[in-house]
Amino acid sequence: MRNFLAPSILNSDFARLGEAVEAVERGGADWLHLDVMDGHFVPNLTIGPVVVEALRKVTQLPLDCHLMVNEPEKMVPWFAEAGADSITIHAEATEHLPALVRLIHASGKNGKRIRAGVSLRPNTGLEALEPVLAEIDMVLLMSVHPGFGGQKFMPEALVRARALRDRCDALGLNTDIEMDGGIGASNVEAVRDAGVNAFVIGTAIFRAPDIGQATRDLKTLLG
Image 1 (cartoon, rainbow, N blue to C red):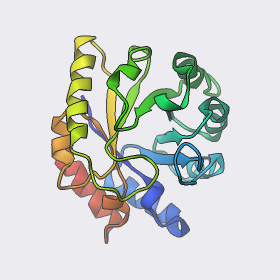
Image 2: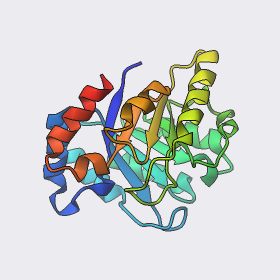
Image 3: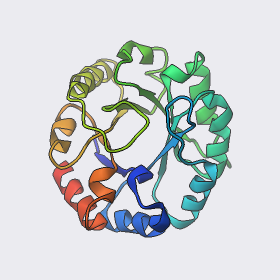
């Protein structure tokens, strides 16, 4: 499967966000990852649709929106309207996961199909995906507890990734497996080898002395 590098703007300098996005584009980033937190589902508050709309005007990179929010069904249409290419919601945030996946797919404007993803916290079992695994485009496995950037990678996430990749292979699914949290040059190859093919990386890119070079170096490691 193709590997995708998705720099996360959570750890960027928001006063120079446009410059940072240009740098990761030059470095070869595949997607731009946007962490949306509502201060309820997780104890932090970040960006809303207005930031997605602004970024849509300045980058051609697909916008990969991760909604760490309560009542995601209320917010999906907002982010679709703002220009999201992919919307990921948490299995723990809804009792109506299949309906919400269908809502994401149907929310695109002018016939656009928005990719639907489902994310799991580190302590949520993979069985939570079973009702929708054949319908979704991507699974986002958290390798830290969601809510804040800069946390240490949880190595047990590699075991979960291998199990999920084996399950997708057994079902004949070409599902992207994304991982987020504590990934950098020291462990990105181990994450790839566990079956992950989409890599959310924030601190290791946006806190590097040269954002573009850090992006290029990680792309090289991914092969």
